[in-house]
Image (tube, rainbow, N blue to C red):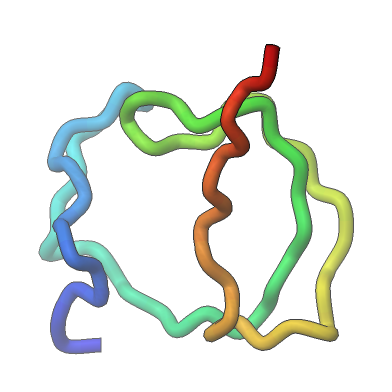
Length: 74
């Protein structure tokens, strides 16, 4: 892929070690869809306490979107 397929480029720093070097990033097209559970999204858009559940063969990768959180009910 010649250009970043994201609306906003990922941050160049990382809390997991070395800074991101966009010149070394290799973008790929999604081909597999998996189902996972997670506790929440962090402020820097990472999943917290995620757990793989299964591969989904019934849904094409193009149909997958980020889930929107449900409002808390009291």
